[in-house]
Image (cartoon, rainbow, N blue to C red):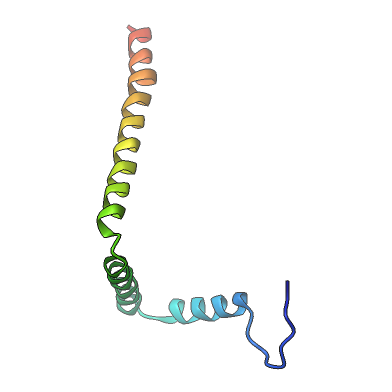
Length: 86
């Protein structure tokens, strides 16, 4: 739903295009610093939210599930092909 306001605001697409233009025109060092600053801000917000431990447990759980699924895939498909080729 669009609300008509007497003040004109730039669209989200226009804002993203401008941010991309500025980022693309930056040096490699400036881009790296911007990414590092963003990651630092995310870390600070995460810690300030009080859910950091829960987030870490969830992340570790996802990583463990991914590794388990990969092991299962390899055991099922790679091992069966090895036996079939013998």
